[in-house]
Length: 205
Ligand SMILES: [Zn+2]
Image (tube, rainbow, N blue to C red; front, side, top):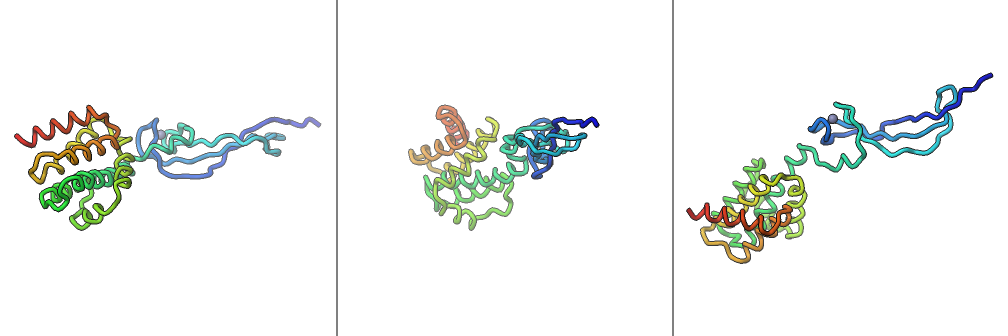
């Protein structure tokens, strides 16, 4: 009798979810698959051999990636992260100036709402102002890493306007805070300085 021996690879699904597919470029469902080699007898896997690495497969375009692809945030997650970053940056700007200034607080609330958090109001702002600076910087950095250059500039310009809203020129402390926001966004000092100057000049005209 002839016994057909061979080695086959079997995959099984070990997880599912949503990810940003770099191939078809959008939020897609994925399945995470783990592979294993088997010694097969008559094409049936019988003796398990080495495990293979896990792969992530896009359910739409079927392209496979390594699991690092799951680290890119989905568009939906980015949408939620932007207002959080705006809240954090406005707090840093307010805390460095006069946090009791009504004009500055109104401007800060407007900026956050402009980034999509419609329910944001003065009460939420008071709560945010009690959070430590390290928390705020982390919120900004999470989003900053994903933003395009123009989006970073726009973001920073809005925060500069919050700092200017009380009507006084920027103090040294406020400038430092704005540079810390820019740094968390991943902007260079010179780049940030350009945005701060342009926005300040535009506001005084
Ligand atoms: Zn895809």
